[in-house]
Length: 71
Image 1 (cartoon, one colour):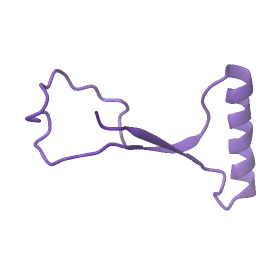
Image 2: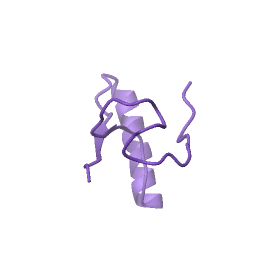
Image 3: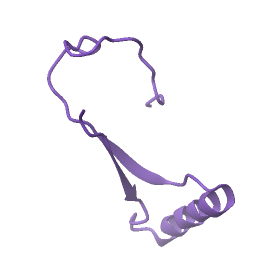
Image 4: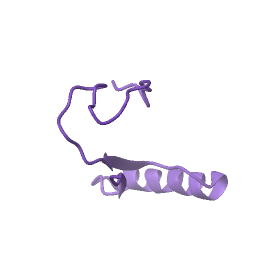
């Protein structure tokens, strides 16, 4: 089994003190008020090998789920 790693980055280094303070305020609200969430940057690291999407010779493709629409 391969490892999947989520990298989470702090985004309060925008160069704008006002933007950084706003992000900190929002993050505190979500952490203290709701217990989860906030504004962060994340990346998912997954070991890959070349194959056509949905046709891996190692696994049976079942379904596709879009996580979020991209603009």
